[in-house]
Length: 458
Image 1 (tube, rainbow, N blue to C red):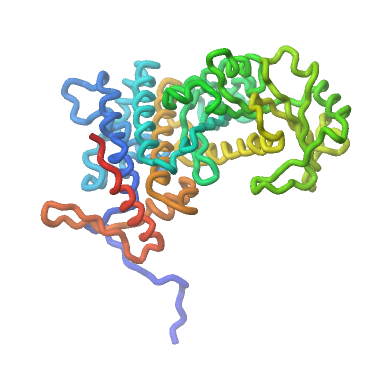
Image 2: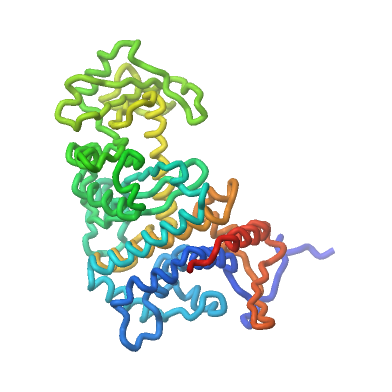
C-alpha cells in the first residue's frame, strides 16, 4: 500500500478557466447599491469634476473603489479585483484613471467632500426607509458614538506625527450610528487629524458632531431624541456646553475624568446613596454600584447636567489607579437625561463600548493605514472607506437576519463575499450560479430574495 505524501489531495492548476466568477457573493453589495439608488445619487455628486471627454463616470469610479475596499482592498490598485469581472461589475476604470480622479477631488478640497457627504446623506435616508422596523431609528431614537482611532503610518506622510501611544501616524476622530444589540453600526463622520492631535480637543469634537448630525434626517439634528456618547475625551466644558446649547437640546452621555474633587465626593458619599449596577439582561451586577453626585461639582457646567459615578471591584490582575478609592475602580460620566434610574443610565453609557467594534471593523476595511501621501488625498480616501462601511452596514440591515446580521466585515467576506460562482448567459439574461456545496449559499440566496422585495428607486 502506497503511503500518501500529504493529507490533502493534489490538484492540477491551469490558468485558462472561463465563466468563473470569484467573490460571487459581492452581488449582495451590488443589489444593496441598486435598491438604495446609491449609484444614481453618487453619479451626480462629482459631476462638476468630470472631464469633457471622460469615458468613466467619476461617481461610479468612487463607488467601485469603495466596493473593492468593502471586499478587503486597502489601496486604489485593488480596484483591479472588480475590473477582471466586467460581466458583474461593469466597466471599471484603470488604475491611472482612478488616481487622477482622487487628485482632482483632493485639489477641490472641502467642496468635493461636501458633495460626496451630501450624496451619502441622501442615500442613508432611503436605506432607513427601506429597512422599516429594522432601521436603527425605528423607535424614534438615534445614538451617535464619537471615538478616536490611531492609524499607523509606515512612511513619512503629510501630517503624520508621534501619537500619544508613542506610535507614528494619524489620529482621526470618528462617529458611528449605533444599530443596537440586533445590528452593527454605520459611519456618519470621520475627521482626519495629525497624529499629535489632542484627545480632549473640544473644537474637533464639535466639528465631528456637526458632520455626524448633517448625515441624519433633519428631525434628528436637534432635540432629545438624538443621543451623543463619548468617552472621557469629550468631557470638556466647551463640548458639553455646545451639546446643551439652547435650541440644540441634544441628549448626551459623556465620560468624565475622575478629578481630586470627584474623588473626595466619592469618599464622602453615604452608603445609602449607592445603588447596585445592572447588567444588560436587567439583573444586578455583582460588585458594582452607582451613585449621583451633586453640589459644587456641577458649578460652571450647563444647567441640567447630572454627574453619575460608578465603583466596582477590579477584575483579577487589574491594577488600581491613584483615583480609585477603597480598592474600588472609579469611573464617572455626565448626562442630561432625566426620568430614568441612574443604574439604567450607566448601562446605556457602558454600551458605548460598541464603538470599539465599529473601529475594529473600520481598521479591517481600509483604515488599517492611509495609502496616499497628501492629507487632501487621504481625506478623499476616508470618504471612500465610509462608503464601504455604509454598504457593509446597510446590506445586513436590509438582507440578513438573526446572528448573520451581527457579522463583522471579515466574517462577511469569508462566508458570503468569497463564494465562487459560474456565470451563464442565456436568452439575454445573465445568471450567476453560486457554488451549491458552499456552506453559506443558502444565506446568500435568501438575502438576495429579501433584497428583491423592495421597489427599485424611481
